Length: 434
Image (cartoon, rainbow, N blue to C red; front, side, top):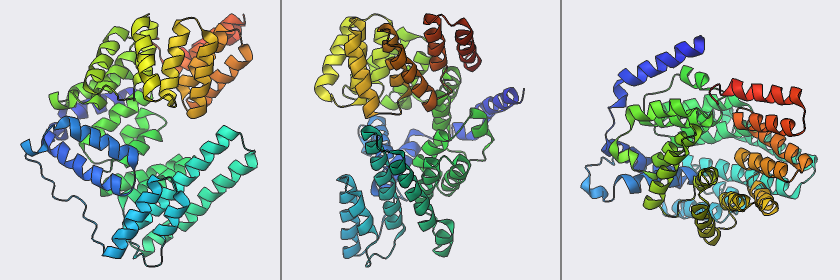
């Protein structure tokens, strides 16, 4: 009942809130330009690339719009410090994170906020790179424990006492500090810093992204006291998609989407995903085709597109998609999933299983790839491999009803009706209309 009341309140606020129509395309573009500059300077590369894509597709010619770019960050440094800034950024771009940290801590550095943020970002990138290598190489648990101990050292080094002493309130730094706590699975601590960052700078897109990532339910997010901003609406859509709630995501999109936004690849991909979750595969395929017409070589979402083609039996189009991405980037986990779907459609399940195995090695946290790997194991009657894949998918995302349903099918095949009933029941609890 409480959840229902909160949902009604949220829908009422979306319908009547003044901030829904308060943002024009020009104002959104203005925010995006500022966000892109700030993110790129601090090497939040995914968020900077997202902003660039939105800018590019919202305005083919920005000069045609009356855009207010006042307030774009201008980091005033002397020539030596500017050189150090560029040197540090280049080291991060090259993946030389240890060197980047050393440059950011240079004795001649006046500790402008951007240097401190770059230093912490480089250390987090270093940690992520080391953890990825350890997972691939299957290093001993003691090595992984040492890496997590390093995270605790980072918290001490960049802790609140240090920030208060320097009167330091860079929202991007606070976002990274929250990310530290996320890596240690202290979500409540992380949430506090993300909220602080958003309150200081409502257009801090990385903080919105990570805040959504650390939510355990949509209801928790609704209760947070966050400033009204168009990024808040984007975050609600991302939140609902995270919990596979396509209908709620569609309701939010329908309330604030404009014709200009509706034609951006980012929004088209979200609309396609919503239709996938609603199992409206023909509509989803049409949206993905529209996405490809606008951005032929955009990788994000193409694995889901291949899933839709597989389900609808469009094997010719699936084979074309597989060949295209094989030539573009065969080392991408998305490409591996596309190729696996292609081989599965051809009943070549051993080849499909090898490509899914490669996909989960490249992206060990892909719940969808692990689930599909489990399906291929079932096709080959490799029950041990299938059980491991489903269990791994469940560890990554226990909210995904598809994994629970797949485990129900697994135990059906093994003729264990009690276990099958349990897993089917959990799937139904998570998605009652499935």
